[in-house]
Length: 164
Image (cartoon, rainbow, N blue to C red; front, side, top):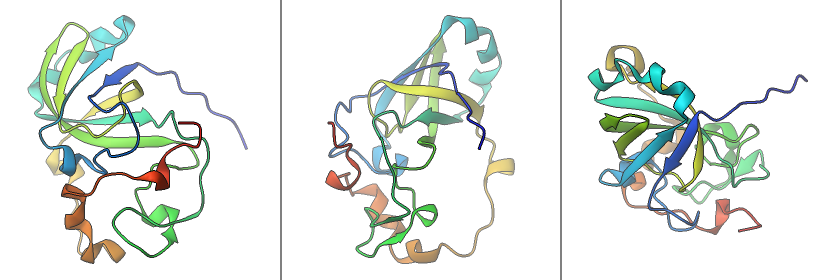
């Protein structure tokens, strides 16, 4: 297996200083304001991004150290296969969120609807485009019964790193 090394392009700052009691999805963090401090060498790449209302953030779940292939997700009480969940402990520790882009000033992006830990390393930014990103899905597996819980549930000890 080849090893891939990602280099962060910036840091995501949020009000969340602990993995415990955080929103579990951006829908549970609708009004949470955060900011991205992009490394200066990437600022030129922000040109034209201000024309988009939302962006995808890809980031490193840097506080997680291991994973299990069966997990009991926050929105359920039944163990599920990891890849049928959005559990944060994953083989490559990569997270993804869609957030509202409020403004860009130099290397600072102000965002809304962010559900990550303060200091999270940012790996990439991509514009959200509904015509590309919204699929007319008609099945949601075990989440058919549970998806609405994401707006109110908070994280707990299940996915908090042992060293925290």
